Image (cartoon, rainbow, N blue to C red; front, side, top):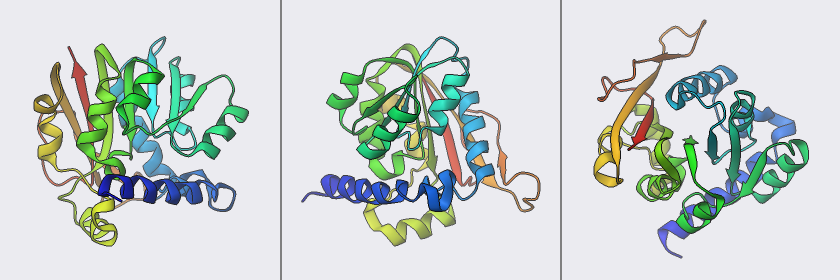
Length: 232
């Protein structure tokens, strides 16, 4: 079994088990966010990067339990949630039939292409599990002209990410700032890449994450990076 197949099978098995724990540990923990406020702050800054979505088509790649997909729908987007755990997708179709849910491997260009093309594509806390270059290439092919690809990834310079990477080896790969800023060299028709850093605050009684402005460079050593790649 090659590394790519091994990585896919490991995380598919892991999240099939993890999603099944939703009733015992709650949605946030089943998606492996550290707490609800971290999840909500991540969503808020990602929505900011998406810009206006009312009436636009949006793919939520690696949607998990569809929390962000439901938020997009509430904001007026024609949202499609995509995940590789078939049981989760089956449940979402039953619970939320007003939204389109698709079971697919977001690293597979042919599978995601069959789902369609979108004004916005978003991948939150997904790319470290699936191979950054391979997955953004597959997802970018689904972005319409004038559209955006939004991603949230752990920063490989962050000490926390270094420890997690050591635990999982090559199966979990945080992303370097250089990889994010090099997206115009990797993907065709990128006109700009904007990045926002999210860093854990020293005092967390109000909000756990402190966010940088959107900019075309990355300052400091944020724990997470949210990027927006804009297509010509």
